[in-house]
Image 1 (spheres, rainbow, N blue to C red):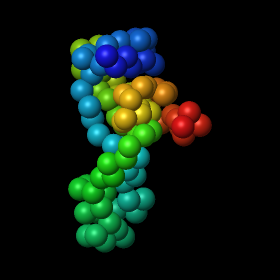
Image 2 (cartoon, rainbow, N blue to C red):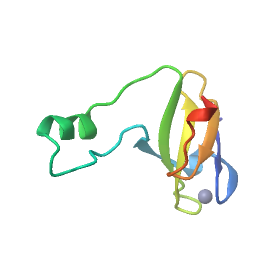
Image 3 (cartoon, rainbow, N blue to C red):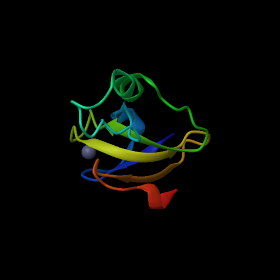
Image 4 (tube, protein in one colour):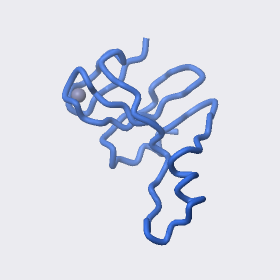
Length: 92
Ligand SMILES: [Zn+2]
């Protein structure tokens, strides 16, 4: 069972959340200057790491906020959680 600590609601079962994507992807800083290849990489290409991975989860059955989660994909251990703007890299 995966337990995710929502910054607003506290520890909750992951069944209350929906996976909302890779939190490691950054939108091109200057959208007008970005090439089609830049957009292709941002929209479609994803890594598939074994180990710590930054993810967004949507607390659908709770406060409906987006939560940033650092989760180990091999063990499903949640290493850190925070608000979407929080830097969780120190927990790696
Ligand atoms: Zn919540």
